[in-house]
Image (cartoon, rainbow, N blue to C red; front, top):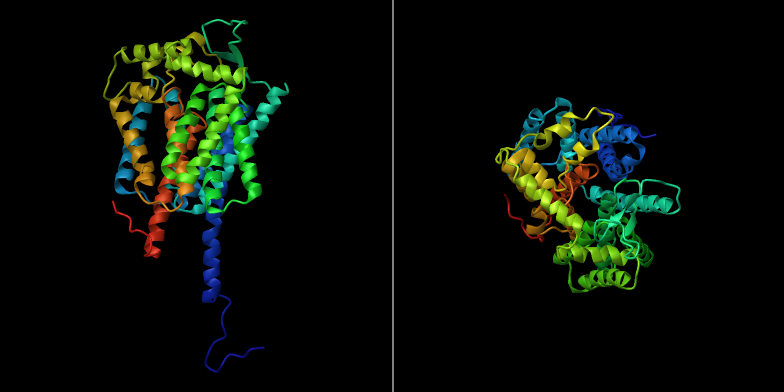
Length: 448
């Protein structure tokens, strides 16, 4: 037993060392909770459509938990980023007030802002790894849903994809079953799996060149990328296929020569898959050529609809509020039955055109500037983690591309994904800045 010297009190149970350990543990607990909540975003939001109202409740609960965790210790935004975010949220509030129905306005407002707190995610690298693993797991869950549909154990497939003409032609086999997984929408499934495929390919490209990816994990990633690409073709989503092309092109800016060769081999293998197939895969890709040539009836119809929307008039600077461009469709919603013909008239199939109709040039400009301010610094600054930077920017580019042909920015699960990518981008830049301050050998980043 140690006896304290005379005149010196024995150490109390609360010593500096113990206090430091307690403080560290207290700081770690919220961080782990935040990381867990962030890891659940992709699985929960992508499985939600399969369970109906229960899925909606799960999404709302998760959004509340994520907001509480993130805002407990929020990351910092630069002044221009914060001002643009405030302007955008204020605009959304105004659009909700201007909606034809208060209930509809409130619902649309919630969909827009429920995951916006993710922009304050912070600079923890653990968040980046957690999101990457979550995306990988989520894609495999959706592949499981497709397998169940192929086996006839799960419904939800779409009636088909017309790749030529407007009617089914058995001689041309132009009617394809489109698989949806648990998402309930083949376009959503295609985009999600294309993001997962790019994640796997980039991990292999960068890991193999640095020798940091074990052989076993490389094999798993390559097999997964191949399976995810097959899933993209099974979805029949031509936008997702073009998104993959865009992802490959954008990713090249982050890769060295050997890494580009790996990604090029992946693209070549996917092309070979199409060229050697005389069935559904080849017909889907062939329909992309019809779109480019202006021979696809679906694309032509969508383009005509966009021109009609633009020519319909209305306040061009501030828009008509949520649903203001199709008031009849909004006001006929009774929560149970919706007139299909009227509801169809409200479809826009272009996120930016929809925002223009509802929020005008002002809304489109603020959102575009906000996303650029949040995500582009990953490109313009020297970010240490090149794999994370490549995945974030490539995914954002693919999502923005898809937003030009479907409504995604305020639709589940992409209303979570877009703000998650923005938060990871802000965190990447902040992490690099902190590392450069701690290590003088790193390049000094420009402030601003």
